[in-house]
Structures are given as C-alpha cells and as structure tokens.
Image 1 (cartoon, rainbow, N blue to C red):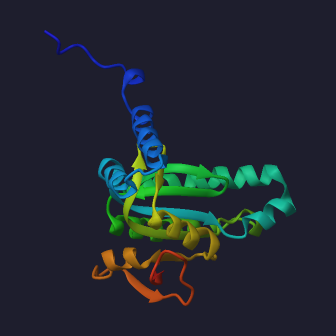
Image 2 (cartoon, rainbow, N blue to C red):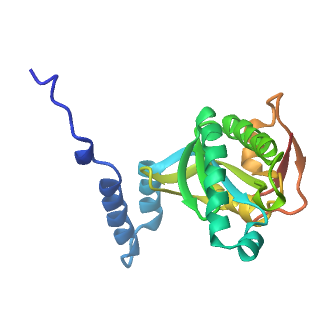
Length: 213
C-alpha cells in the first residue's frame, strides 16, 4: 500500500525544471541557422497561458519618499499590502511579484481583474478617510489580457504584461484604472463595467481605455 506516501514539498518539480527546459530552447534558438519560428512555437506551446495581468502603482510615491524618508516609504508599503492583498485574494487574484511600491497580480478571468481593481480603489478611499495626506494610498492600476509566457510562480512575460505595466506605472494617475484594448474587448459586453477611451496609447496596444467606476 502506497496511499500513505506523500511527495515532500521540497522535492516537487516546479520552476527549476521549467527554467532548464526554457534555457535549452533559448540556447538552441541562439545557434546559427536555427529555426527560430519553430522554437518560438514550441516555447509558446510549453509555457503560453491566458491570463489577466494587473500592475499597480502608488501614484506620486517617489515624491513622498524624498520628502518623508525611507521609514515612511516602508510604512506606506506595509499598509498597502495590508489593505490590498485581502481584496486581491477575495477576487481570485495571485500576487506574483512585488517591486518597491508596485505589485504584479494575475487573474484567470479578466472580469475578476476589473472588479478587483474597482474594489481596491474603493478600499483606498475607505482607508484614506482618516489619514493625513502623506499617508494616503493613491493607487493607479493597469490591466492587460491575453497569451503570456508563465514560468511557474516566478515570472510572466508578454506584450500584455508590458502594456499593463505602462498603463499602471507610466500613464496611471491617482485613482485610475486603465486597460489595454485586448482587455477591453474581453469584458466590454459585461453589464457592470463601463469604459472611456484614452487619448494616449502605450506601445503594444491598438487602443487604451479608462474603466469608469
């Protein structure tokens, strides 16, 4: 009887095996005369998945760091996690990466990502009601949807990842929820989400949209 035998978590095959496979394919792709199109197709076959990608940023945060110092920076980062992570989990999101005051979050369904973004903004407003100006959470969110290359729970790459990042970090302003054209196409028929077109479109997207809430 083997029913009582469990595979230790530390022995599970996850990212290292996937990374090794990817590295071999990339090595083959770099060889002179390689069939890059065929190798690219194999990489997408192995690692390509459909995900909604969310990038968040605390708008105006760099100025606050310069003005109030690193301890203030750490406090606001801590509070943002405390406020936003429960909202993300309630909407089925997976926090994949944190860089400074920014988060990258994945959702299986774009509508869940849209609803989560609105809920996060509402959570910001509730949190800010009794906070001094320097401690308020001023969130911007960028959303993308489509085929990406996902390697375990370590990282994700793709055009929609780049677009979501630009919408959330570069173009985003206080309270904004911006999305790519692909994301808009995926959810535009849903009755509880409304959009307005943006005049500025990041590279990699044919249009950009503002989610109105």
